[in-house]
Length: 263
Image 1: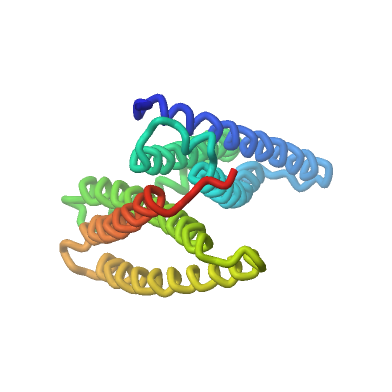
Image 2: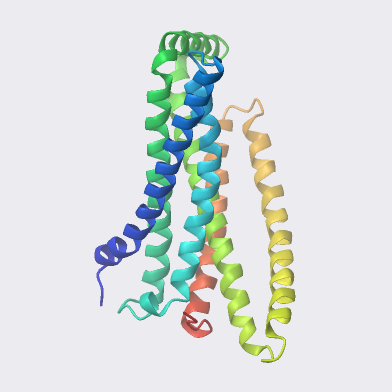
């Protein structure tokens, strides 16, 4: 059996290569845009940071889409499904490798933000101190540091849980559709597959609406004046991770019993 670490390296390398291409295109786009701003005479001290932040939105969207596409290809690829590893291990490592790819992309964006903020560093520092002072004066000052740490960690964990749930849902939709197409007639299979995926997606959107309502309720509690409202972020994270685990169990079951490779 292939070890967890060896499988992780095998699945992570191509995803990091994808991220390197995205980051390279991002840097080229930033440089060309700055050159164009210089040509127009509109370059100001905060322009590099504004441009970098704007492109980061597109980088995040493209990175997520390409990571999802790569992950779903692995589940139906002979090259990966024939690796001597259990379906549970393949699913877990595939999800982890995608997460590593997104973290890598995020770190590169933070580095670019810092570099782009250098000309704007004095004003940026002053604005940050002003915001920090305002937050401190309008908060529970004796527990300010503790609350800020809990808030930061909770926000990061909630973002991770949302990302994992979205990936798990995409995989479950994909594998469910792939498994159900085995029962479709050979003739006009593309048409029936299209209809089938629409039905599956609508069903998952309905389930997501229920999850969203529950999470909104928790987040509304977070923004209330309750003394334990900080912990609501962690409750919401646990709720999302629970659904992620359930969907993962379903995906692994489909991989073991219903999903065949097609590439």
